[in-house]
Structure formats: structure tokens, C-alpha cells
Length: 161
Image (cartoon, rainbow, N blue to C red):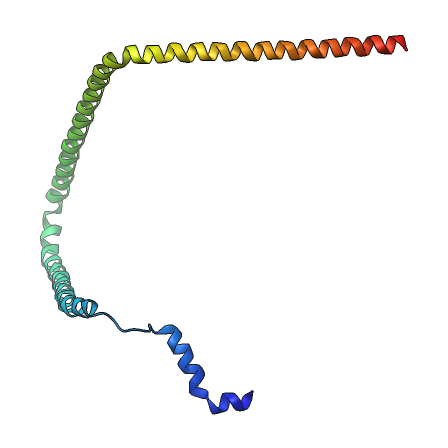
């Protein structure tokens, strides 16, 4: 066994690599996609780096201005954020109210058209339920009556013996 491994050391390594690597290479469309998208990805990565650098430089230059005017800027930012929040909330409540009213109007329009059908359906369901309850009551009464007769017979038999 050890001799077999010594004679063919590359044989096992080759088999393990075959399991990892695909049997066929990439298709031509995949190669074209990589060739086309690699420069685009590089450009976008470069632009993101430049944007980050510009943002840091702008923040470094604007920090003294923010510190000097912070007694005015902070309350102004709070007021603006509250105003924007109020307008957005007002719009959301308005849209919700209008959609609710629209749904109610459409429901009642549809209800007038469907009331006779729904009423007939409800009557049929009630009649079916009443018939079912009557049948179950009859079956239960017969079961109780049968058990009563059995109990009565058993009691009379015991007394006779």
C-alpha cells in the first residue's frame, strides 16, 4: 500500500483537484461579461473612494463653521426635522383617511348589490344548521334511551338473580 502511494503521489492530488475545479471552463458570454464589468466595477470603486475623500475634506473644512454657528444651526435643524415629520405624518394620515373612506363607500356599494344573495345564503345555512342540530339531538336522544333501556334491563336481571 505504501509502495503504491510512493509510485503515484501526483495521482491522488490530481483527483482531489478535479473535485474542486469545474470540468469545463467558463462560457464565452461569461468571459465577455467579466471583461465588460471589470472596468465598470473599478471605475465605481474609484468614484466611491473619491467621494469618501471629498466628504472627509468637506467635513474637516465645515467643522469650524458648525462649531461657531451651532447655537443657531442645532435649533434650526430640529425645527426643520419636526416640520418635515409633521408634513409627512399629515400626508400619511390624509391618505389613510381617504383610502378608508373609499373602502367604506365601495363596501356599501357592493353590499347593496350582494345583500339579497347573502341573505339567501344565510337562510340556507341556518336551515342546514337547524336540520343538523335536530338530527344530532334525535341521535343523542335515541342513544340515551337505548342506554336507559340497557341499564333498566341490567338492573332487573340483577334483582331477579
